[in-house]
Image (cartoon, rainbow, N blue to C red):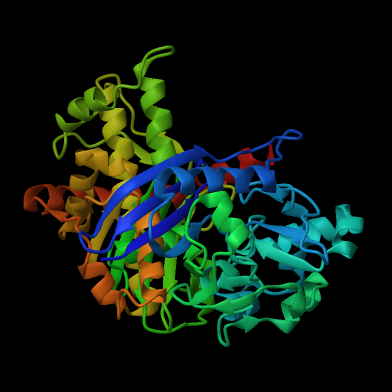
Length: 501
């Protein structure tokens, strides 16, 4: 038996899980809110010292005094911090969803054609990426940029505080938009664009590689044993996907929390610019010699939560159970209304930042259950549309679709996904999938597991299978093809005009 720690640096909370390799289950966990600051409207930052303090608190609560063999981090990805020549923090950490670097994103897009950028990085430019934040820093805080000797992604910063090493795994490095996916090295072309040298960025490794050991100082602060092996870890969605079984080509994990991320494993990097045109992200997995294709919708669970609060009434507790029961009454019986679920841009595969949500086909006989059902149906339609596009562009069929995340508590949504996809889906019973995935990477790094397959087989959490209902599948196939698919194009011109206002 070995005890492993998975650390989850999330947008809303910092979590630590103490994982037992013998039982394949979490023994203890702890959480702290992710500290955030809003210095001005539209800006969100993290104080690095407060983040580190939150990390030490959760590690102490979950694992202090335990004989921990290894630790790894699953982290939000598109943010980082500037350090000086002494390794001291020079500024706050700009949150990944902060939009202040939109002008810099537009500038990068103007400098490099979308197709060329995708062929190099596997992604399209966005204000979220590290390169745009670095450009913002260069233009708006030149004194910080000039003093910067090292820039570290968030997980790399916490690893530095734990081990003293400057290291990033390939998946986290990919989200800086500075990594060449063809060679898995920092791109000289993009470094030149950002005004950086490779020496200012961390060393690169696979997420399952050991990159250092816990220092005596970090051990005193966290309560973990000095010398604990620390692995590089990786992007939180990909750590969770690994724990859910995404380690062989074709495997798909649909992870839905606030946002929705659909991860499919591909056998090799495919620098096809059509993938970029549709907004898909295509980059290194947390495991060696593997790549992922990722679809995304920024408001999925958030959309369900927003609608539930709206339909439950001002000042009332959100009635998820009541709305689910009401929604179930007309499944496969009443067509409409229908949502275009673009509450925060379209996501993939349209990749249209100007697109907006719409509720179409509403009539007086519809009630709150119909409106709620339509939202769940639209999320299932969105998933099918993306998987179809992914297969069309890559030739890789989807296999073993596993559902993760808080919205799986809505059984109806999982059933609708099976019906709409016309194939079984598997709902994971695993709590804290990101932390568990990080713990498995730590286990690979310190030799507890010999292979990713062995690590996943060791888990003590099961999957529940949901099979499609053939009659409902036929119903939804018609609704998907005849109503949902045409909706985006029919509304595009109106949404473009609205965006102009």
